Image (tube, rainbow over all chains, first blue to last red; front, side):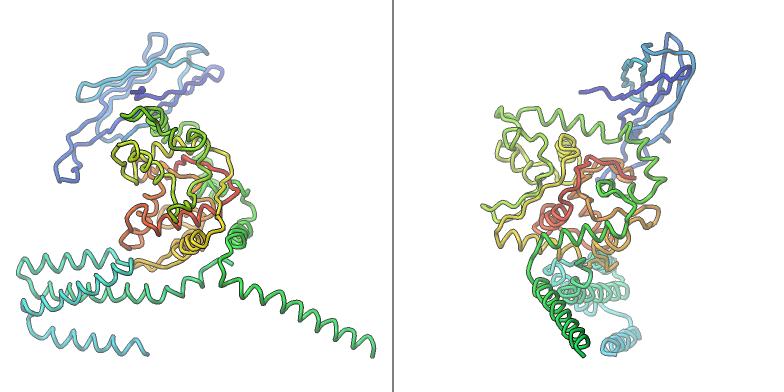
Length: 103
Length: 101
Length: 287
């Protein structure tokens, strides 16, 4: 299976712009399936972006974030060619990590 | 004018029957005609979702012993089915008026 | 005197010419003429929206609304159908249990052929859509068919559309009375009002493209299938052409037909044919 994380990071002078799309059901635990049974909560608890050993973006999420979340932000202090490491962990203990080069 | 006559008849009929409480026989008769009309609409491939749900509501009310409500719902379902049959018949030719030429 | 009679004669002959020109048109109206229909259909939209570039119609509501278009262009840099596209690519390349692949079922290995679907199969005497052909391919190779409305089917068609992006829609109507009948039947379905709302497909997508229906902007009928399958934020997932037809029907409070029923196949044939020449833009993203 391909990675659940898609990232694009582009450097524009001093500022690096990051876009990421994560494939995750983000079930709230309040929705019922067609049989009428509750779908248990299943959501990302922490999403982290690291660059050069420093956290540049950390999000503590709950159930109020949509399915397949999309994130966009920018930060200072990185340059072209630097590695950006993205990782998430969810409430069921699952996680995924990927690394992207800043272009 | 042509269409208001059956409408008036339907109204009068509705008022006359509303005077007494409906019983199971009323419901069964109303449901049978409604079901037949809805089958005809389905046969024309022009069933309306509201016909199906109103018929289901009639059945549910009857299962709960509320024949007043069940009969009323069955009659409504019949009217909806009849309207969809009318639509299918009139659209046989009327669609051409919409066509881009 | 002489000029007067010449004028009279002139106007008489002009009237005759006009009559001669109009009368075959009246006769033709009863005959199935897909070429004339497609021309009239495209001209209607080109004249209604003179500022919209012809190839832009395939972008649906975004061709009608500048603000939505800007948001969409940003979204396209990171499109929501990307996961489905990757999944479709992987599925397409994965062999069946018998070792064959989807590529064996399609001309040119299934790559860059979306613009030729649906086509009229003269053996069967019916319209065959891409979704139908995919499921037939599965069944011929001993696999269970997929649901026509979403998930796997949408991923597969997303990949096939992606490999055909930019190619002009190229639907053929063979010289076969059954093909003409299918086209005519699709046209009839498109314009026929149905459901408690008394809406036809044309009520929204011919009469009101660019207008709002609740919070949404209606897409023009011209080129509407070129963008299929689509990721709809409203569905938070992918949907096929079949899914679009089914939900359109139920929104007008008509009980939808079964996916890939004759009517749906015919209306897809009609809509695709009248969009001939416009580029494939699928998979698309819609609000």
